Image (cartoon, rainbow, N blue to C red; front, top):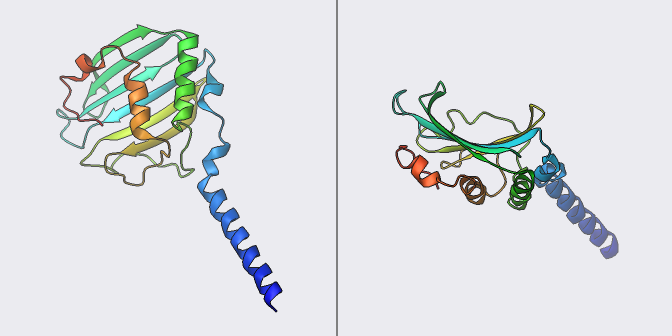
Length: 181
């Protein structure tokens, strides 16, 4: 009967849409970054250069909180600090920064939690984290290799938002042997 086959077809289409929609949007139920704009939270971008020797490997972090923005650069894999610089921040500025992170999908990530270590040996890795009261709320990553990345926001725009929080970013990174976006 034509009517029942149309009904079965329509049912199948609806089921496929529901299943594909729920798997693609599993991260949409996470709270927004801006909901953590209290004084006990901070957002961090951690950037790692390609896998090289201990003496050549470079990493840096940009940490944004309601009170400060900090830029740290590291040499090697063990967190040896090359330089650190901090700038004052305000709660209102921090809230606006988190709202901007919301607009680029900062909290969008796969539920598959995997470490970025080793996934992009010849490229740059970007790790996105949000902490609240010392609890890690968000931890995802992307890379220039696009290798099993867990970050589903907009990586370039996210990077730019963090970068613009550091007034003299260019001067701080000029001597670092790392090519970012």
